[in-house]
Image (cartoon, rainbow, N blue to C red):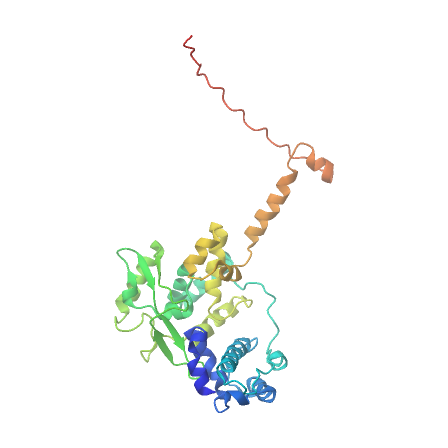
Length: 334
């Protein structure tokens, strides 16, 4: 089975595959043909009770999906006449739901809370403040921020290039810099004026051979450490509805969509492969709700409309301005 896991790296993204492998180590010694319902139940018990995890998870849904792909691939490769069927994933999959499902709402900070968070972060830690700024202004994943080098920033043209990403081993938390992003796309984004002096200071203090943000050991800053610090600051401000690091990317996406109303442009800015993905990133702001409410109320802004509907004062509609009459005359040749 271990060989099957290695051979099927093309079935999912490299980043996803590398993250899921530790959770599937339980199956390393099982031949693929011997994986049945009993083994899957044992795997579910392993994930629930024994699998080392230091962060909250909703389920092992992605691992089940990868395992299903691998076993189906194996079924297509076995010789004819061999009695092999993909076991049912339904019951063990349900058992590996670890916490209550999300209510579906996007977890982000509004503009006021985002300002409070960044101001408090600046007071406590300059490095993490700059990391959060880059996440916000460029809507970056934390791995993309930690994968930035000096050669990614062109202050003359005021352009930043997102081409690398840091991955962390989920067991050891050791980082590795990959020469690609999650979607394998290189993004070039404009640098706003506010960030130019900030980036100048960061570049001066950085080693060109290392990422811009490194730990005392010379390694890329640990995502887990950044998340812990973010959570501490959020908790001190009473902003407990968000956590981790990815909320900064969702915050940037939501506020950008609210300000521009152009979700296609926001999607390209984030480097998403589809606008549908971006819609899952963007929450509905109070400003958007107020615009919708006002638009619905404007329907009744006609003469007498409000009186007839609600018995209140009507808001008379202003008559459309008359078009000016042209003073030009047609001159007849006759």
